[in-house]
Length: 349
Image (tube, rainbow, N blue to C red; front, side):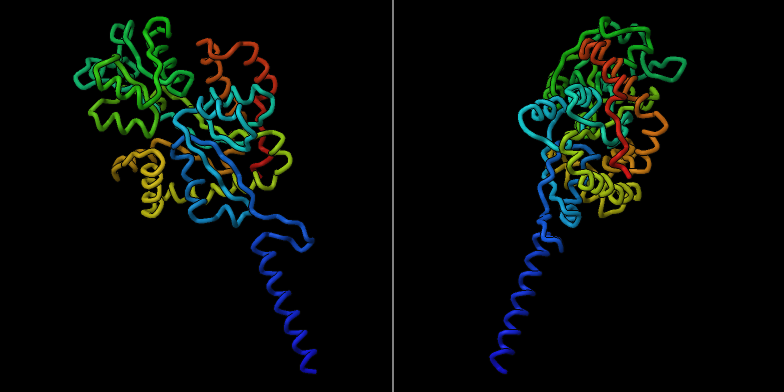
């Protein structure tokens, strides 16, 4: 009897140990291994990437059966180049590099990370007359103050969109000015050394400009622009992992709500994110300004923007600019437009 009891006890211990091991590995009752797998995401170091950063800190990703593996870049062009080298899953990009990815016909536009129009800014040095000259519509500047001037910016980026619309205010085009193309940090150094007349940056680089005492001439929101950051996914991977993709997009909602509430905890985490990943230290005032300059979208809001056609309208507006600048062929633009820019709301429910 004692021997039988010992056998039963040992069996129970083995069963419990196995069950715990299976739970840790994510093995379901039917015996399939569903262990949390790496979910690679390529992003710029921007506020819309913070939800993924914080979710990883909270291990919220692992609770949803995936393990976030983020890689951060300075520009969307850098991300596009990386996506050509290896298999990938998700990327957060501006319109221009997103279009380049979508044009491969191997990706889908699955969501909208943010509208960062107010966070794209044209800067001037203090005492520049452009800061005290305004058009009847309230926009700073004048044709004679803009024409033939040199603008420093990262081309084929959201900065290009802002510049194009700003020039239109004065019936000018890119042909009427000089453009020096540089990466953000390089552009800041060049402008600091005295090169160029005007500088265009996006956040969080804009705070490096403010720290230098440079003044804001205009931002994208002043011109009624919509400059979105977009989520694109490897189409093959997305179709094979719809639940994982849905969980990823839905995961962001609670963190977006935290930012909107500007809780002390979320603000502190956001500051740490920029300090860790970009070596940028923002003051409390700058952090508050950063949050105000961005609109992050929940899954419900994204669904609405897709279903009512707003997203496609934004895409067409931005895409036409890149086509005009020769960054994208008209044929490629037409093909993307006919394909509705591969926009899908299938993973937002």
